[in-house]
Length: 221
Length: 363
Image (cartoon, chains in turn red, blue):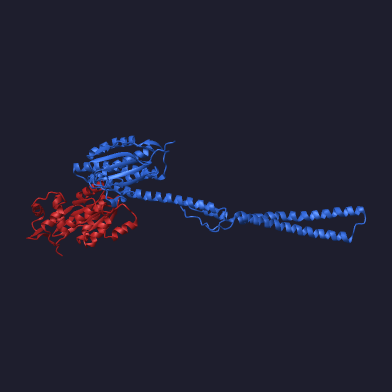
């Protein structure tokens, strides 16, 4: 999943970028409120991790602007203020969740997973579709009950498709999920990963809709 | 404050009243005794000289006895009345004692001064002034503690997250990077704590006695210490000709200059930082300027606030403590000077002007 990280502190931002990448996300890191707005207008993110005390434009303002545009993507705020008032202010401004600094990286990743799950309309922590199951927390994938080893990119691609089962995602959309800024995107990278996934999961796991994109079938009820 | 009469007047009035009552009682007894003796004397006039002498002694004795007896009885009464009177008069003092005594150490609301005698009113006024001063100091301290705990959370969060990244990293290069970042983070947290303590000490106002200090050697030393950072930022440091002696604390002046030069290097983003020392009227004029991006006029007030962090010129991220200019401002205040942020005459960049009183020359 592609995540926008907005954090002005050099060291914390660096750590969060690395931590979110370790959890398998593509991360774009911006350091002030105005750049965050530019990024949000230009790209399609699965979630935002937003620090509140930002230079140039405050995090709360960025959040209000985002919600004013009726954008519903999940936002987790990071705050150094631990008073109830501050938390209420953040949640009322449109945040979905918050963490008070200093926090545990594992908890941050778990909360991001929970936000992504809810945003995708998937209440269960383990995603299931088309005979596959994918656990974002342990990063394990089972195909027909048998464990499958996937590379980080393959996992991210399958995660994106299983996040919205039954919905086709175009190649550019999948590329957005896979790559952060400045990362080299091969012209047929998505095709290559889809090919690998089909070899490991079975040819029917991911279907191609010509001219539209790729889809993982919803679990048969 | 409404004064409730005078303590002295009340005491004098009550004492006089008590003495007058006892005196009147004594007079009444004496008057009765004298009347009785005189009547007896008139109804049985003395017949002999001997008898006459006897009657005179008896009369004098009776009068003396009636003068003394009520006094002996009334004196303890008088003492009792005085005790009550004095207690009554001093009630405002007791109220004040109770009010001050029952206060918790942090209840610093002013004492109610209505209905207090004229003698205590100034005392209450002074106490209220003192309470207000302590209250201000306490509130400053509370705000500082709250700010400090807030400001320490971000570096702590960074340290924790970096450590967890290092633990989870499978790639050796990424692990080393995270560990190095932890070291950088420790240095930054140390810098933040040092700056906060400096400011806390300055707030407490404990300043060494001022002495004559030549600014140029101080500036030269600070610039020499900043040379390494300047090389890293690809920035030239220039100290222009000129000097001025000021009345000050050399260590604080050094801290002030270091923060100014540090700010110019970190946030200026120019290729040159210039320090100049001169005179303007009765003041020494110290300027630190850079030829970088400058500070927008609208932001000049804000950058002087505590914990306001500006993005660093090279990475756009914030790395400082946000206290540098607050420290400079406080030191300038303690020296009776003033600080302004402006534009350099040569065009772009930031110019910081600090005016400090020159050494007073004794005639």
